[in-house]
Image 1 (cartoon, chains in turn blue, green):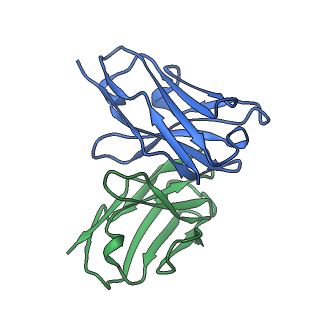
Image 2 (cartoon, chains in turn brown, cyan):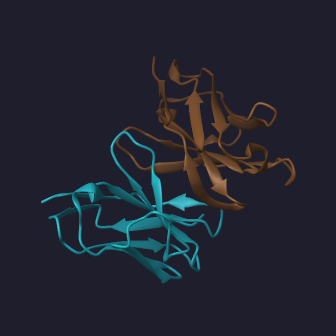
Length: 121
Length: 106
């Protein structure tokens, strides 16, 4: 059974940093493109960023609102995905979902349960 | 960037109703369009991909159609488990979600 379990969410002050983790199991993590998708309270879904497999270059792409502030990395030896968030603003308050792509297309087969990040003073 | 819109934003319906949700893209996405269902407090679930392909395990009362810039999701006979919010997503160029359509009880 595929499982994605996010952790690391919490309350952080504006301007602060937070690192989210996503532990993956039930599939070959090293072969999977992975993304983070967020959802602000009462709002819709917003793609945050993506990391390809090391075989595909391990490159990352980000949505405009987070480019330059967020980074994504992966530790294939530990089947874990990370989202490093810096210079946080109240606009970053959301539930953050870890997602697994279907092959090399931007379609999401797997979703975690989400972790809430609240940016507030 | 490709922008997605959905209509209506909210839809009130009864069990047994035929429900149709429309999704429009700001430019052609060919058939690279997916539909997800999300229930409160839960992660989204993939229903339809490539505009009209039903994901494994999804009931056949769900169907998708369209290409280019206009797409529809149809639920042929609404069931109690179907009250949820539905999102379209293009994956032609990077990816963008629509704003969602909430289907609630009339």
